[in-house]
Image (cartoon, rainbow, N blue to C red; front, side, top):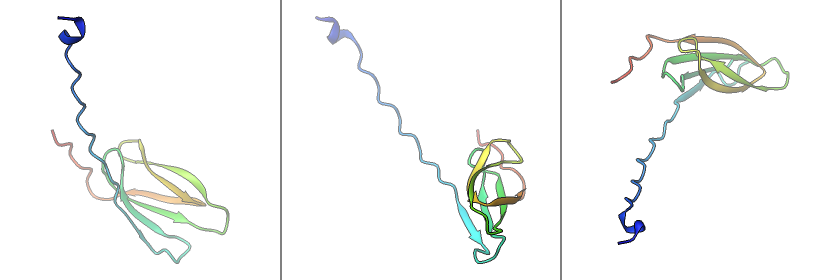
Length: 93
């Protein structure tokens, strides 16, 4: 027997489940649209209020008030409010 016959074959890695972030945008036609979403990292429900004052929109990394991670990427002139909604979810173990 050769060495190539004795070496075990590598096991395939399990597929990584895709994670989706729910987003609901309300008051789109006003100067202060609101985004209901959840933190990408800890799944804390969030309300993000933006303000459109006619200036050019820029990219914002919205920080989660619960875990401190990047919760959402927003393309808006200004972020006015980031508010957690309800209780943070408990980690399932």
